[in-house]
Image (cartoon, rainbow, N blue to C red):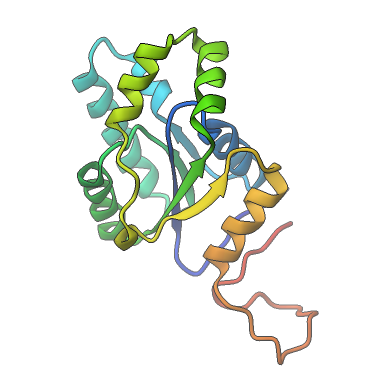
Length: 183
């Protein structure tokens, strides 16, 4: 079993337009590293209103943060202010938030959305207009929604593991601070 163990827990927050490949990447990354996964659609489907979905999601997130384990989050964080709110909550809980922005061309994303949930072009355009790309101050890692999972995961792992000290031997018996352990 693979496990994501870091000196500080990370919250890998996957964002992007609908159909970009956010859920595919987030689910696979969480499963690969045995990390808890929170998905916006789970709360939307279980709730009768947007307010109830948000309250349920907030409650679940607070409970997961108590574990101190790195988590993967795929939420409808369309605006910078929504992302700032969750970043503040994560940092207060001792987490290092990392935004992973999954990008793909609009035509591909729209076609994927139509196949997955039957969304028409007008509805898709409305949802797309609500998404605000991350500001450079959010330090989002950009990955392609068309690349393989292995390529995407390597980019994220490089980002959260930090720089390597190349003067040390490649084989270590004990994990070093900030190093990712895969078992």
